[in-house]
Length: 260
Length: 206
Length: 68
Image (cartoon, rainbow over all chains, first blue to last red):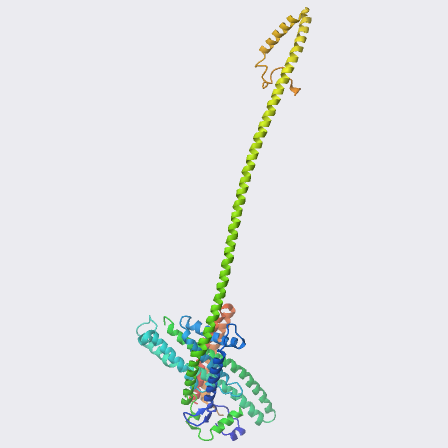
């Protein structure tokens, strides 16, 4: 990142270091802006959810109606339909936690006083993906035992010389590809989306402040695009939260699928 | 957004350090730890409090709906029973009506039979009386004709033979003999009403 | 001219997923148009396919930053 002086003279496009924002201290354990957002979101979610579920009535009010809508989406459309009605119950808290946490954190990228997507720092999506990773590995080993779990990686009926290759591929998929893609997808979407927003905002600002003559007018379409992409980010925020728990359920459901 | 740049610029006033220029795909340990802790805390809260409460609500609602269904089923059963009862009554009434109808028909038949028998009897009686009357008429006609024919025949015979047969007793004897002869010539007995072939039965007498 | 070759690489890597996502949603639209009642099932499958396809582009952007 260049200094402000140079920023005033020539346009510096947003880049990865823009997301490194330590508030207290430096180094590996610095308290960063995204940490604060994350903790804030967690606190808000915990308090709001506990308060909202304190007095539930069979005939829902307005707030309870929305809460039940979200819960029903996670529980029925994803949990029950993908994992299966026999096994999904223990995983509902996990899925609901993931969904609300990711959704609210993603929305924090747009909500004005915060405007920083927590998930654009890869540590947070990695933490969530590790949670899913541990859950589906433990569930798989617990269901079939370690040997059964490993044996189940390879579909039956393959010629013997393919078995080691497939086994290796599946092992890599299970142990490496899945958590990595789960992490990178969420991170990449929020990161790229926020860079895009930064680009339109900073570019529009630069054109407005430092453009010459008619070039100042070009900042208008830039700001317009900024608004459009902000709206688009709302969609992305929801979609990524949905997709994250969708994939988590698919991975968990594989544990309970009887054949490979 | 300039605020963001300001913060960044302010933060990097000292040393940017490794983490500023690090690849964005390398997780920052502090953030990873905070992420894991937040996730676990929220998970525990959800698992202990939020999800059980929501599940309880759903179970209650399901129970309510099932209770409603049960009530509806009970009402339906009741309605069905009432319908059955009504149908049974209807069937009973129907059989009763059929019985009554059968009975009435039988009675009617009987009355008809009786009437018919009565009518037949009546007609038989009328026929018998008619026959009787006919026979009586016939007898009287025969008797009358017998007298007239006798007189005519005697008159005719007297005129033919030129001999006056004034003597009453003789004339009667002759006539009777003659008529007896006639009777003897006629086929069947003259008293029988069924034989209309006797020459003296007049067709338009009745 | 200034720039980064890695970003060109990302542009190239986005071609494949772009085509793939287009195909997935084309099939989804056709499927829903043909049988609207299967919308729910198809939606989940389409998003799953979209996600698996998109992950290649995400790899691309991550690696672009790694090698920049």
